[in-house]
Image 1 (tube, helix red, strand yellow):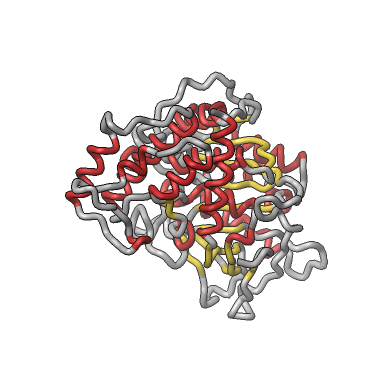
Image 2 (cartoon, one colour):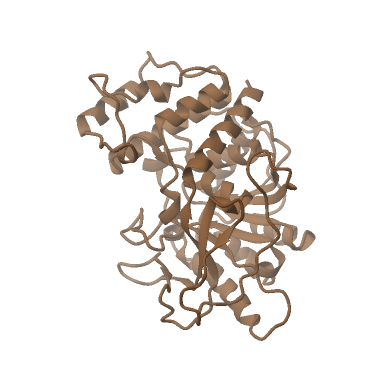
Length: 413
């Protein structure tokens, strides 16, 4: 991949060809001497959110300003508990954690215990969090930090966009105050993972997602004829690219080695009843259901002791649950780690390639509610309001995650 962010030319050349403002390069590859990027993470801490928090804490190019919590994978109060517990595990009890709205804007809350476990962290168990919650509410924190540091904050959303929609209500200038909004959400040219057309984060609160995308559309429209600096379009990373970030047992074994901890129980579990390797589609083989049943028994067996390192124990136990879920529903023993990949791209945009496009969200369709619709052919005649990721350098990201989180685990042993 290029060492600089790549924004593909708009093939339409007419509608959707709004000026694309690009902030100064945010960060660079591991080892870069680029300045640290001040980020606020908005999370609904399930398994991959937890790994994203660890990635942010482990990244020398990240200045983790605060974390805001939204209901999604689990209820909002459990999200706040998980988030603080993971931050304490990573040695970052200094990070401000705020609780946001506890239900979507219009709809009833859906959670997903079958994906992330009843408490959102799979098989893992963490001590109760001791760090206090912020006195600020999540939408207020987002708006206040953007006002306090105009043009500096990168807001990275790994959850339903409820808090961002409410922050826009509190501060309509948010599209011009943020350095960048980076969204994990949507399925732009790929099928959904919740309904045939919708991705989970957008599905939970499509009304909020519509508000957010339309706010940036309005900001872009306000640029028409202006000679001033153009609004910075959000980066939207959907299932099209995040499902390329697959963590397999071999990667987890490498992470343990990077932490100096030896063999991982996830790796020991990655054999079927006859000792055959169980691989997913990324490795060219499916997983028969009999092997899946054997795996589920083995991953919880007493002969696969968890690592003594508390951070590695958490990673192992949470990922085992996630990998079992993907084995049942996606045909491979591994995990799509959407959220850590999005954090990595927020810190180094060269990990993905983007195309400007007009995006809107369906909120009322009987079969299409929660669908993110990208006007690739410019049929609407609207200007682009997002940079949608169309390619991803998943290999570089996985290597970086192993190195960074492994180093953090070693420091916390």
